[in-house]
Image (cartoon, rainbow, N blue to C red; front, side, top):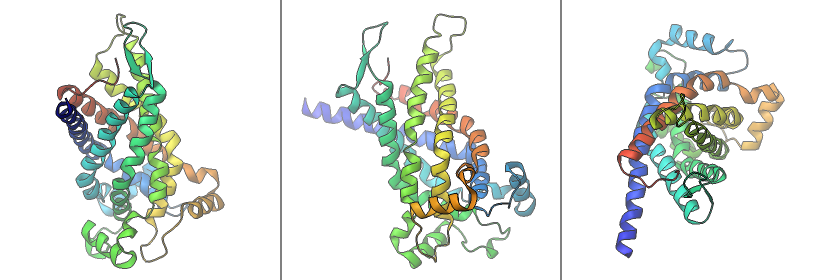
Length: 309
């Protein structure tokens, strides 16, 4: 029995990890251009751009359309691993909470399922877990996205490897984790994503047997996209703080979370925390709907243990 249990738990971890890889690659392909616009809006001096459309047009006009994908290499390489950790740990946290009583009875069938609060807590801890890997990747991405020079020869960082080399030379290996506290604050908002995702999934399940019934993959797609709105509306202040911490020159002192909060408030007021919300919301639905459609589809294909009934 012990070996069976060990094999089962190993399968759970593997299934969630493989599904996370598919989700991560999907997010990079669908949303990186929006992310570059968001980062420029957040980290450039106030007044640099008149809005998201102006930012996009100026990037394309001055740097070429391919500049929207500046900094894409770190997430293209790392997102698969990061989302593997995020979604693999999410599934394991869901199972852990289910097995430790954070459940409720399904009225129609009498079976037990994880509560909405349980899905929210699982999302919180999955987000915090993934922050350890996500921080250095996002740090490199932000540094590369903020380079507005058209020619590679004119840029401070010639690419991801050169960026790593310069940061480590100046600040040591810990310098790669600049913005870690901001990353923890931001990624804690996965509680909102996965809590609201479950709310929407339950709402769509109530349509079964009616003229508006939809199949499970479509419900996954719509719930992922709609849940992402809750994630970004709640998470954009922490995303601003995190990205501004990461955008500062690597040659200076590493910024603190509270100092960055005070600087944003002193220079821009509360609206400063919401810079980049427009592109985030535009990006939110297609990126997260696609990612969770891929994730849930792979989980079904690989025979993962169910956390909802």
